[in-house]
Length: 475
Image (cartoon, rainbow, N blue to C red):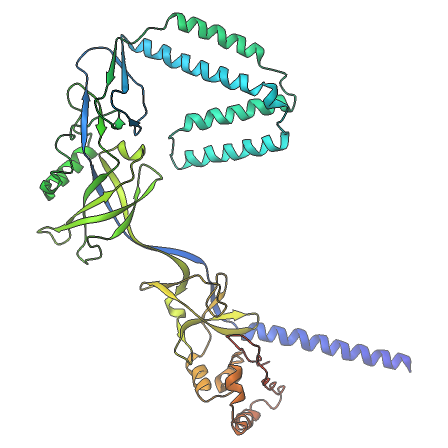
């Protein structure tokens, strides 16, 4: 008796497992929706052109002989009567001074590294993390071709490594190395000579160690005189070698951080207008600056307009070139990318998309912040009724028209959903107002088709309390 009971139970369990696995396989095969994962995406209106830097600047001249050694870096602010350059008798004198500076820097680094106040408080794990961080910072800057202040980054890295070696016991001290460095330093100081002349400036400004010959022609007072031919001529000259510095010029002084740029763009579609705030990205630097379009002048060629831009951000990299390859970005949008063919409307005429949630589909609204022929961008929000990142957007496989017809008729499910086994959501409010006779008619119409299939579950009258209020899925 027990044996028969066990066999019956075993058979029932086997049928249950087979039925469960089979139904899941059927649903997986039946509900084959073409989908795309919702991801963050950025889009911008961009114009690429060659721009000419223009600012108020004045050449610094020296008519004597000798080798020039600059005392301040490019882009640094200098005060009245500041020494910006020293003149030495030969290049060898400058090389001696450079080597002395390097030796003094290394000596200071090693003395700090072996100082008891430094090594006694340093922990190996903490020092190791600082070294990794500094290394990654240097590697990132080199990858971006940002070499400003790279020597300081290198010295900081070497300092950390020197301290770490003492902390972990690889080095006891650096006395032997320091003795050798001091010996070299004393020899070089015996060969050191004083400069024969010092070049000073008679006003405040921002120093640049080169000139290009356009300092007198290109300034903010005569920028309006630049026509299409002259702009194209300057760009061509600078791209093919440059005009060359003026006679006896050893640098220049820029009055203030304000600068302007002129270039030629295609504005035949009137995308850009005076007063627009734009972002500028340059080919020679990773810096991005914010600027404003001050003037757009049309020419006889409808595809060539002269654009004048103003900016108040001046950096070391921006003063190295007269002509720069630049991207001018007007509208920089970031949101969730939605393919245009996935766009749908629900019963309330809300714009949105269908997404797959497990074995079900549901409608989510989108907040369009940008659109083009291929896609739209939906604003990123925490509202669960709107599309979220990593949702699976349905591109095809949903009969939207019949779905909306079912909502308008206040049906629990549409005939198309039953035939295609497409799960559909309706709001709880609409379910409460449904006519029982309509539901009966629907069941009768589908009865002949589903004689051998399980009866669909009735939709619960108590929907979840949320903005979506999804009904139960048709099994």
